[in-house]
Amino acid sequence: MAEHACTKLKAQEVLLINGGKSTPCVIVTTNGCCNQPILDTNQEEADTVMILHAKYEADRGSTCIAIHSPDTDVLVLLLHHYRYIGAAHLCMSTGRVTLHTDVHQLIDKLTKDQLNILLSVYCITGCDTTSGYFGKGKRRVFKLLTESASNYQPLFNLGEELLLSDLQRTACTRFVISLYGGNDVQTLQQLRCIKAKSSVHPRNIPPTADSLNLHLQ
Image (cartoon, rainbow, N blue to C red; front, side, top):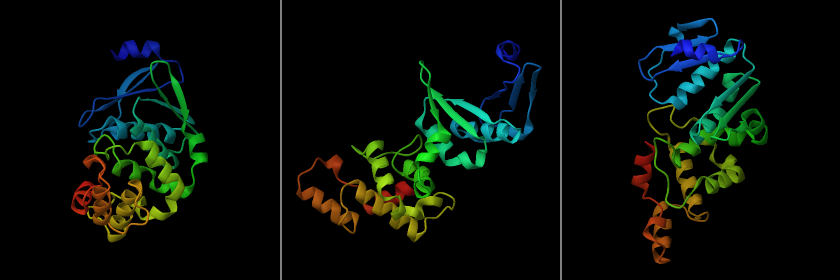
């Protein structure tokens, strides 16, 4: 299979193959293939392994890197890690009819405050490994993010420590309250009571504080 892949590559192209957790990474070029121990990883998700591969190639001097994936999670990861990857031109393609997204151009359209919390906000509102909120799609989430990113900066390092800080928990709670339209409400319990009295569908009632805390953990 690797020999067949070699015949399809151009001289300047490199193919990285990784089967997942605890499997060696194979580098394929027109000269053949070899293992690269530095890329061996215990990461379970291909989404994050792609970031590792992109960083490796950028460190080797590649200035233009293209990643093909149908997953929005990958795009958010690329936006978050762009400055650490270090490639001048980073793009993502998706779909059978290939659509290109220039990550470096998207970066220019986002403020520092927005980039700081983009990944955290994306994760707490639903991704491959976390649940979302009924009826609260990513368009609504992104609108809130772009309008009020400066209000939620304690989220920038969410997940880096095992335990949540009080600032992180408060910022997450405020974000969820705003997501449900409760800008003038102080607690989730108050918002839940207001929503219940307005006879909204039970699925449109925000989570309890305990449920949200478990979600964040």
